[in-house]
Length: 521
Image (cartoon, rainbow, N blue to C red):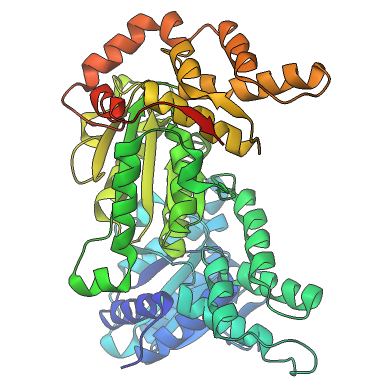
């Protein structure tokens, strides 16, 4: 049995809707050209003759040939469809491209009424007529919301992206380009996942023109540009050192390493569930964001940062449309790390009330539903500095696999952080980690890591000599730790999280078993 693409599955469902004599289908997509072929096939499968309509050409066949039916005026066209329902003996589907613009405001009253009249008419079985509206928005007028079946058309999945790639390569000979082999083809498909059909086609064609081959790296680079244009997703480059760039957080790192095995074929055959995600709460500057970047590298997953604030809009319905598009992209991408940074700031109006017209509450509801019901292999990591204003339903089991508390680093971790920071700066000097760990008590991880560049400046300005332990100690004396300036707040956070989360850091007693020494980095 041939495996169906996600678009083919939706087309089969649409065909069933037509056979069930649904009169109005509302297709939400920005990919008019790609989707129309599926709509035509779905109509034919249901026994309908399909025609297309727009305000420029009127009624046409799939190949663009004009047909003498109706009018370019949307109101008159809908009246013609209603007359065919009354008098005809054919089954027709009219796929209307530009209709939504003519259904709003005072100028759209007549057209909207014509559509309502069509939906109310019960045509004989032998003369069934249906209207399919193609729109980039799911904002269906209230007057027809009860009869319209809204379908969010999915982005192309891996199989469909593969078909687009093969079609892009097909016109070229082996002498003109280097044809992609299995490994290159799979990598290019993976790099293009999450793009619309035309966007994927464009990236493949650009790669062929520029390199005379399909170059997965260039496809991925072009994808970053396309994704950035959406302004709701940010594509992050992998952290070169991966988990080695993160000092401490041993409990959390061990947990994440163990969960990586769930993505193997062996785990799938065993029936191991795919990990859903982790919630990281804790003190600012202690490695929550860094671990998000590191785990993407360790798992060889793309890292996507989602800005929930960018989803909000002052226009009614636009925020919901943005949220749906975000989920469609994430579902299409599949395996990735989704990073929701400082989620409490994005959702602060969801529970306490705000002047955003309920947008925050809507975003929270949509996000919770997606987290509970999603089928994608995206691993979601949400970070928060303060959970006091977060809704309890966000933190319950089922949304995330585990909730972690990220506290100030202990003495052993402080030595690890200095070690990791020096690796990031490609330094090999010998330092006394024990002295530095003692001098940085109550420092956050970011405050400790910032000592290295400060010490490097001091060493460079002193005849560009090697950095010493003393340089780091001098730099530490200039720091006023966050733990001192926000002592009461941190204590409250610790109290709030007690018994509610697993500690990301090993206890001081466990860390003491590892003897501190002069590190040769």
